[in-house]
Length: 195
View 1 (cartoon, one colour):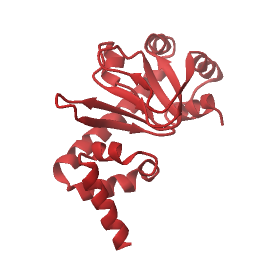
View 2: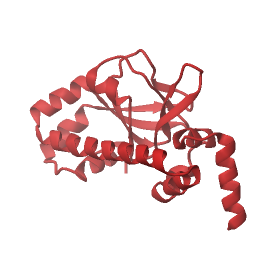
View 3: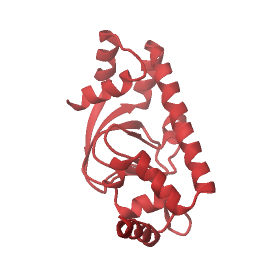
C-alpha cells in the first residue's frame, strides 16, 4: 500500500468518499520525506501543514523557560501530527514537531484544506470526528496525569499503544508520560525483573 492509499484508508474509516472526492483530495496532498532530527514545525513560525505519518516516528514538544522539553504528542504510522493551534488559527507555533527517525509524511496544506471543506462539506464530518477523538484523548491523558502514579501511566500507555513504546526513544516517552528518563528506566527494569 502506498502513502496515498494509506491516507485515503485513514479518512475512509470515518466518511465514505466518492471517486471524485477521493481524486480531488489526493490531488491536493504532498508527500514529504523527513530525516531523523529534522523539524517540520518550529516555534514562532506559522504551521502550514497538517501531517499524516505514513511511515516513521514523530513527536511534538515544547521547551519551557528552563530549557526542559515536554513531549505533547507522539505519532507513528497511521497517526496525525502538527501544532494544531498554529495550523488552524494560522498563528505562530508554540511547539517543535520533529522526526525521531527517517519518516514519510502525507501533508495537507491549510489553504488547500479550506478549499476542500468548501467544495466538499462532507470533510467537515471527518474533521469533527478527528477533533472530538483528539480532545477526548487529551482529556483522558490529563486525567491520567492528575490521578495515576507514574507506573500506572506507563502501564496504561503500554496497553493502549504497544507499537509506540518500542519505537519511541526512552527520553521522549518519559517526557510524554511526565517523568524523568531515570524513573522510566526504573519502572521498566522493575517490570523486567517481575516477568
